[in-house]
Length: 116
Length: 113
Image 1: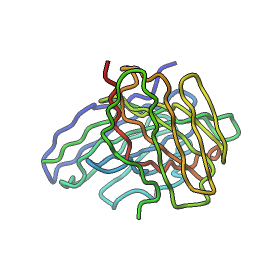
Image 2: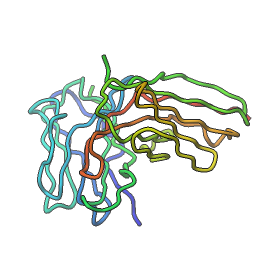
Image 3: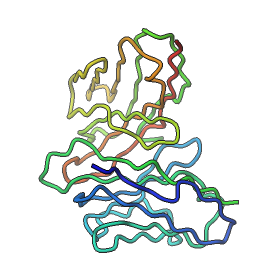
């Protein structure tokens, strides 16, 4: 089974530019999550999709962040315009739908975003 | 105050040692407790999963949850150099409905040959 795929693995952009991160979840996983780790801090929840719908976006920092999940498959997270404090590692995770035994989310390797 | 507190380390032990990793938390409503292992430049990987209080053992790993003290632990017996990684505790309120995870900061572990 292919894992959760994220790309790019690393992105360096200038303040004010736009960056789009992509996540391909495990096929058949209805739940898709975005998390972020800022240097020196814990991994923090950003938002949760169930299929194509946003279930919980309480962790999104501000309106510069826009997440979409086209047709309930892959997801993108766009940061526009990027600020220095957006630097960090962005993780995507997926899990099977509700009602199924679920022993843990599967995380991707992350996108390391550096805003200079 | 953070919801989940975890000593970031680093923690260095000799091969074969017993390792004890711990987290404390403040929200008594947490029901599901997990330990993730993260190697450098990789995503977190689920190691252990426990519901409510009690112990769970899987090979060299034992997870303990004490809800009365709001304290969880992971023990690694006969530690190996391949166990060198960052260990993250995580917890959630509603697991099978896809609840979001609340993570500790992670403890960096190094096992020396």
